[in-house]
Image 1 (cartoon, rainbow, N blue to C red):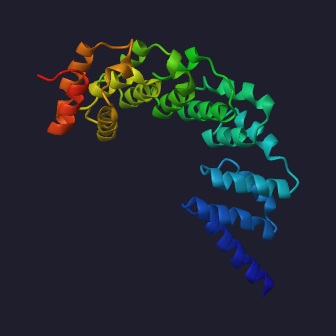
Image 2 (cartoon, rainbow, N blue to C red):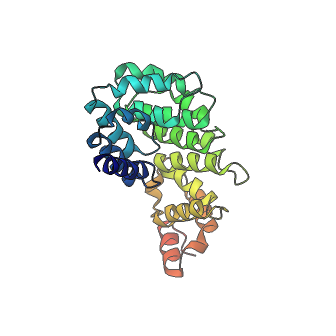
Image 3 (tube, rainbow, N blue to C red):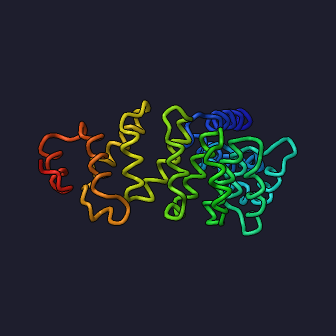
Length: 260
């Protein structure tokens, strides 16, 4: 009777641990300890869900293991590391893991490169602007996104012309979005120029973000002191006039001294 019950419990746990929903998988992984199967926690360390990975690390630790060492082994797998193993290492890693993560930024697999960048950012590790700028043009969208997020603190010192050159609607969407993210972070006239350039972008989310930036602009010349003259601001407002009602447009024109 006991054996049958244990087998039934194991079946339930296996179903939970293999579920599609992360919270359910996490419950299944946690239940492995009560079932005397804590050693199986190792096989869940590289789960695609951060919640499940956290439960797996707890389970491995409860069994006397060291999840950190398991992650270092997984990341050095000659067959190629899983991006989720890289993420797990960053989540529980130590100072000595920074160089290991840096090395993975040049990994041939895009998801691994992205996970390494995310891990370095999570650990507040410095990555050269030149490295991240090169990765803005990466063919893998998640890599370009992580590179742009890593560059956000440096947005004010980046060359805006370099970023603006990546806004062409005919270019890859993920590169355009990464460059636009950084120009918005830079603010000022560079953000406004980029937003006006994208108000008719074919991608709905990018287009709406651009229009939101334009609508939020107060169009006070002093706001762009030293960055743009009234003539440029007037030209940008004219290009984006369709986004405003008559009163709103008139108010902005008045701020620019365009009363006629």
